[in-house]
Image (cartoon, rainbow, N blue to C red; front, side, top):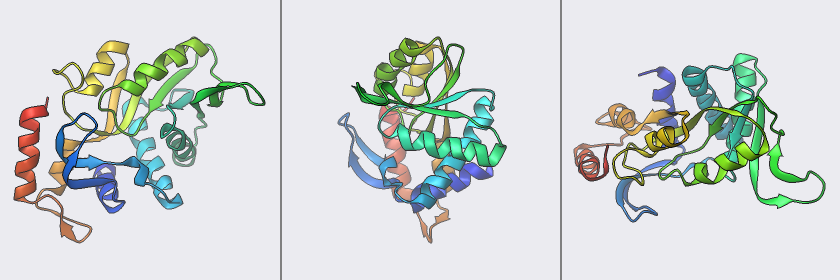
Length: 224
């Protein structure tokens, strides 16, 4: 596993973003783990988060694209932090763009925040985590309405590796097959387990035998 992936897994735990225990998800599923990207709240955390996204984007898609698009609302700080990190790490200026939930009719008008989209723009979409693909369902038409853009791919921080709405594939694979662009994550839950099972992180063992059994049981029911 790449060093930046190991560091990112530890970073999620240390930032209290990735938690383990018993959680009820919006879907009603009882999950032994939960991710809340809203727990990244400091400048230092956002700077590091942008760097991890930048490294994953460079690995999966390269830097030959024009715009990083983040669906509102969580995607807004992700686009800002990551475009700054791409500039600092790789010396490449990428424009950032997000959608508004409501169309603005005065001042900086329109549905978009940040850069306008232009015909021919190559776009990478950035999100925190995708479980159902609902945000892509809402924002993909917005992208296509604004200009003739090419979506190169979607990047999320964590691939939960569980079945999506269709009941057969994970949400990232469903999005790939439905919309025709690549999908990727900084890390997968399999990599999280590999890094944390019976290994010390932040001064303690995060995934012990009992928690590992709960995760394995969860994936027997909901895994792909």
